[in-house]
Structures are given as structure tokens and as C-alpha cells.
Length: 285
Image 1 (cartoon, helix red, strand yellow):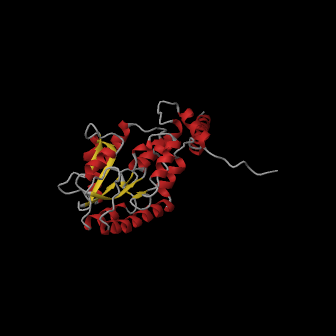
Image 2: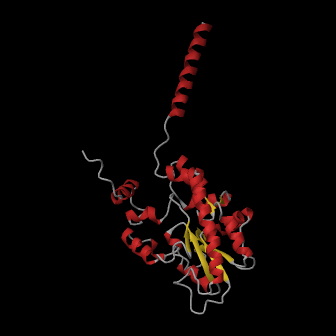
Image 3: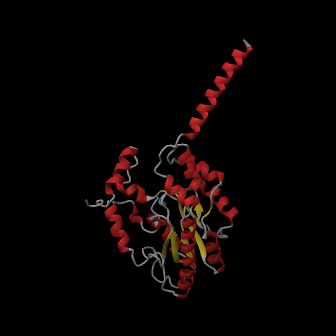
């Protein structure tokens, strides 16, 4: 009798173990963000790209300091700006702060972005510095250049954002409020022109650094065709006054194919992206 019970228990344990192994060996679900998130969090190529941009930023900063006519805010900078004190404007997310841990959390939990979970991530102060960002902002600060951060993080996250960045060692602005958050004032929407205008009232903006077209131009939430036209009209500024950090994980590029309409089901959003891609015809017979 005891032998039979032991044999039965052994069989049950064997089944449980084998089913657990099978589940462990199951492939994770497909997710559109996997490759881009892997690249931004793990690839040395990404780190090299970011370091290259911020190395160029130092060169451009020195050029701009020597050229009083230089401005990175052509639409907002008013006349007689040449003798204003210098400043630079940087976006925060994926420009100076790496939030890939939030992206990974969404991947592993099959979640999409929500303000609720994003604000909790901000409160955790788990973001790290983008390679080269801290060194560049410190360099600008030593040159007497005021470092402003214009971000679409909500105003409710400002304290957590400040604390996160202070711990990492970013310049905090001293007695000047250098953190301009979305919604901090009624007119401060996702488009950043109104906030750039606040900076240009008192400063000559030397550089603008971001990861999304909207960090530079308020025409970012338009069609792909109109975005391309706007980009072309800004051509003189790219690589000079405006420097772009690569971010393949999210942004207005990702939503332009489906008209930035987040109410559309995911399948429709994905189909819209497929439909705009241009393919090779394939090998000829």
C-alpha cells in the first residue's frame, strides 16, 4: 500500500515538474516594443550613438558661445537677443533620462502606457542617465550656460523628477526654475513652443536637444506627409542648433501612421504602420 502511494505521489510530482518546465520554455508573447527596447537598454550601439550626439553638443555649444547671432529657437527668439545670457534646452525622457525599465515592465506585463502607471514609475525615481547627458549638462553649466528642461512629464511629477535628476547630479538651475513641465500652466500643452518662448524672453538659446520631433517643432502631431515637409523646412538646424537622440521605442513617429488616434484598436494601429512601409519587390525569377 505504501509503495503504491509513493508511486502515485511520484507520478504527480513528475507531472507538475514537467508542466512547470513546459511553461518556462514557452516563448514570451510577441510585442511591437521588444526589439527597440532591447536596443535602447542593452546595445552598445545605442550608447555609442548617444555619446556621439553629446560630444557634438559640446562642439556646437562652444561655437554658439562665440557667435552672438546663434539661436536654437528661431520661432520664439525675439529681436535684440544677441546679448542675453546663454541657455540650452533639453527634453528629459529618453534625452537625459533613460526610462527603459518602464518599457520593460510594460513588455513583461503586456501593458500599454497609462498616466497612472507612468506617474508611479516617476515616483519610484528609477530612471538613469542617458550616456553623455550628465557630462554635457555639467559642461554647459561650467561655461555659465543655464540648462533648462522642457518636458512633457505632467506637473504632478515635478518633485519626483527633480529628486531623481538631482540624485544623478544634473544641474538644477539654482534660484531659476529650469523645469518646465506639461500642464504646469494652462497654456503649457504638449506642444513646447509656449515654454520655449518663456526661456527666450530672458536667454539666448544656444542648443535644443531632444528625442522626438515635437521637442523642436510644434508641427509634430500632423500627417506623415506634413511632418516630412516640416522636417525639410527645418533642415538648416539639424546637427547644428538642434541635436536628436535616437529613440525607437515611442514618439510621434509611431503614432503618425494612424493619425495619432489612440482610440483605434491596436490591430488597426498596427495595420496602419504596415500600410505605410515601402518594400523591396523581391528577387526576380
